[in-house]
Structure formats: structure tokens, C-alpha cells
Length: 286
Image (cartoon, rainbow, N blue to C red; front, side):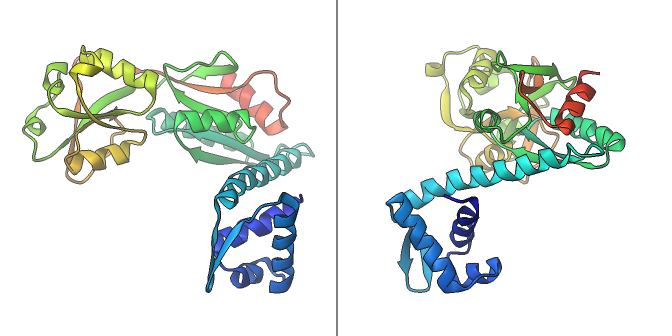
């Protein structure tokens, strides 16, 4: 199975039309159709459902799409790494992060590093902690920013200076929106939207001073914006990291006593790496 063919497959999956995909790939439509047919025969599966002028991925096609994307991204990352091993320090560094205040600190570090090595670029990937860690393990990311508590026993890391402060996103029509701060007792009898990640959710529940059975948990969310949207539409009050952002129809209220967590920037221990990654690691340590 060639990466070139996987790129063809991904273009067809994106465009949902073989003729248009062939034009973008600068090959003929019969050639592209034959390549896809050969790929299906090689794998022994059907990748597409053909409907009039559009084609859609089958279940097996969706599985291949995810694997193909990872393989193509890894190839591009590998090329960028070795491009930085000749002459001056160039190449690309991949950073993974969630919705955290310390992202500002990380980007500031990246900017200062580029002032020293302008030939280096950064690929910034946003996602939830589990997905970011999975991409780290697959070699798709060089560094990842994690909210504590998190298991970093397999990583080297630095602790960020920024403290992640928690808040409640409350619909502006709610009586609680008139409060300057919210205490645990204010939130024990109202529907809540809590963090998706289990160990972080437990930290919030401990702050509330209740067992999960005593709370009204209307849902969970792994992104602050989605949680705020759910709060605006009345699903519940969202407890999340305060990103100093305003959302339409929602008031962000600090928690009291304050709930704060640290964050860490981590990377895999003992792995061979490009010059760009080595230099950035040394920069972070200083």
C-alpha cells in the first residue's frame, strides 16, 4: 500500500466526487478509478458507496480514512524533521493543547524561540487530553500541554507558570447571574455540566463537597465553548476553565473559594528527535 494511493483515497473522501478529485490531483478520472479499485482489491473491502453523482465512505472506508490521515501526517512530520537536520536549524514542531489559559504562555515561548530560530515553524493541534496523548504516543505530536492532574510518568515535562482558574458559565436570565462569585452551596441543587475527563471531574466534585449521587449532572463537555453554549440554552450551569472569554447570553462567574490547577508541557522521554525538537527542548529547560 503506497502513501501516494492513500493520498488519492483521502482526496476522494474529501470531495465525494471522483471527477473533481482527479482534477485536483492532476490525474485522469479513469486512472484514479483504477487506483481506488486496486486498493479495494488489495484490502479485500469496499471503501465507497456510489450514489448518482456523489460517493460516500462505507464503514470500512471511514476506518481507513482515520488510519490514512495518521500515516500521511506522520510522513509529512518525518519529512519536516529531516529537513531541519541539514545546515541551519529549520523544520516543524508539533504542539498539542487543550483549551487552557497556559496556551498563551506556550505560544509566547514558541514566538521567543522563533526569534532565535526563524526557520522553524509550529503546528498547533487542539483537542481533549486523551486524544492529544494518543497522538503523542503515535509520534504525531512532539509536545503536549496537559491540565493537572495527569499521569506524566512516561514523559519529561516542565510545569507552566500560569494557574488555570475555574469558573461557572451561567445563563444571563438565571438568578445566579447576579452573583459576583459562586459558592459550592449555590451549585448543589441546580443542573450542572461538568468536565468530561474523569479525574478532572472528580476534582470539581470534591470542590462542590458532594458525592455525584447528590448532584444534578445534566451532562459533560470537553470544550469550554460547547459547555457555554449548553448553558446558554438552559441545559445546565457549566463548570470549566476560565478562558477570559465572553459568550453570548452567558455570564462567566468565578468560583469561591477559588478552584485552581496547574498545567504541564510534556514530551516523550528518551526518544530520538530532530534538531528543531532538541533545540526547543533545551530552550524550555532554561
